Length: 141
Image (cartoon, rainbow, N blue to C red):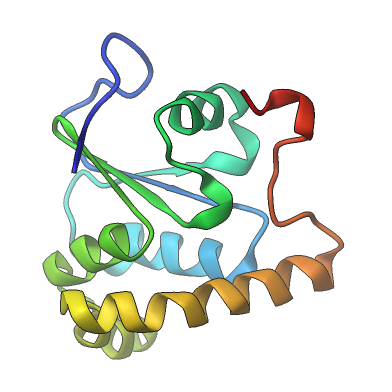
């Protein structure tokens, strides 16, 4: 876990999930997590549409093109760790979350399965004509 960025849009006590809003799988998972995952106060942020947030995260080594980001308290989780954190705490009512939650709640399973989720994301983005990385080369520093 990494310490959160100080004094910016990331300073909030509620857990925040930053996801790629261009990916229909990511969007569906994020919305279900918020609405029916049983995580009170979870804030969902579309990182594809928030360039400043993406830049802050990238500067700290958390690239949205490599996975979702979870901001909790003074910690940042990325990729499989972010999804595992969410799934371990969810009390899902949605059928998809009832399947994915227990499957991804275990750290080893989350790490093993997360690359498959990234492949599905790549395919979904390609089908929509969107780049895997929402940041043009000029924004990478």
